Picture 1: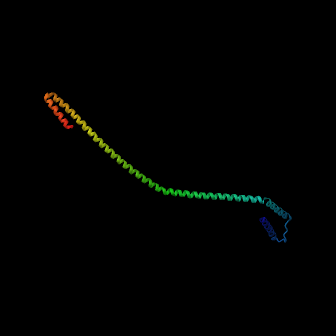
Picture 2: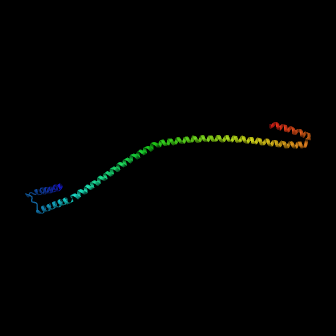
Picture 3: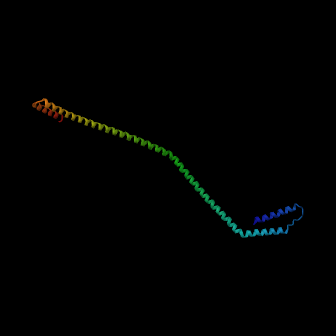
Length: 187
């Protein structure tokens, strides 16, 4: 309402100023302009009277929706900042733990390498020992087999010689002597 009154006063003042420059004397406002001004004032007054509450409600609703949107954006911004700080903290933790994890993994790898090397050495030692024992057993078997073969061959040769060249008395003496020697070897 105040703005419309101020606007009308400015309009009237500009009209007065414009007419005073022509030097005509007192200003006479034509009646049609006066009626039009009154009609415009009535129109604005009626619009103001009837639409005042609607316009006020529209702008107050718009203000409240803007305030609600501002609050939502403020809370979203705060939440985003909080998430940013959390993510940054997690990244910092990951970066700090990366070096630690790498050093721990390297240490574990070195320990595993030493353990595997030690285990391989022990296994090689065990295999070497088993091979030596197996070789000893095989040597003993071979010696035993050779002794048995030598005895068999000796007995066969002795039988041939005894059956051809020796008399029964010599044969008796040799058998006794052989039994004595075998008994001496195998107590």
